[in-house]
Length: 223
Image 1 (tube, rainbow, N blue to C red):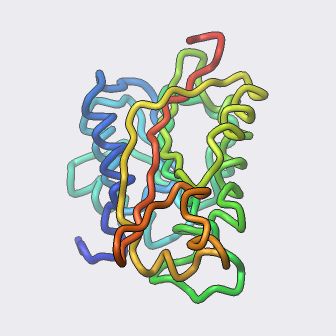
Image 2 (cartoon, rainbow, N blue to C red):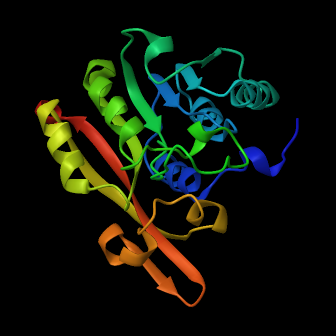
Image 3 (cartoon, one colour):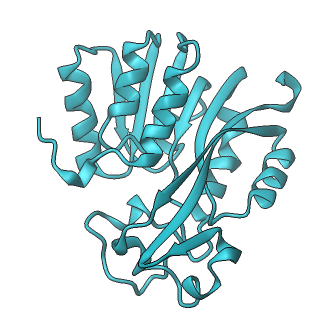
């Protein structure tokens, strides 16, 4: 199994893993959207999930995830190649995990080292996040939980309004500050770096820092 930097787990992945390790394991049906390297789905399987399902739009990520699950001795797992909810139909899950792409990117920026789907959240950063939220209530079991990363680029007030319209609510479980790599700074829309504070960014010397939260989402009636 190859461990190159293309699918190296990020700080966002590490924050999701911390939340999973710090809480009682989910023994029901779990779903991860955007499996990447496969570390989160493998952790869920090893923690005792009854059924694990993964989805990623990149074929290479699907293969990496299957390899990691196999190496860990996890036989009863499904990993699908597809977009968001499409591969799982109307199935409900007890735990749903997602690190959505939320980097504001314009269509004419240079290609990153992976497919654009890895980071591209559209010109406002919400394109994939909002699609995910639209389908979340339907796929979340009545007492289920979702854990997602939420970038400081993205307006948290809009997200909470969106969730409320879907009968959901969120709680911040962890806040993290990370250094933005040059590859991401280069693809930000014109003017973003000139309005650092407005977009939750801080500059110290040549370095730019951004923040993100890990949100736990539940049905409002179950809270």
